[in-house]
Length: 75
Image (cartoon, rainbow, N blue to C red; front, side, top):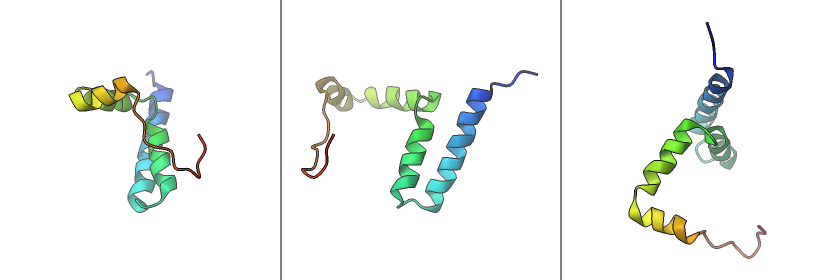
């Protein structure tokens, strides 16, 4: 029996991150942890395709739009 270890590990990370987020939804670390666990996943690709199907969102991406950076933060 063959197991795709990489995909299974990514799934476990997503579940663990989701559990941490659900326990502490106001904690910024849990939000970033969930985002990191989704990065590069098929689910993230699907979400991106879905968002880009919205014309207004696709236009923002095409323009290279980004939020303003607060004065006290560096990029």
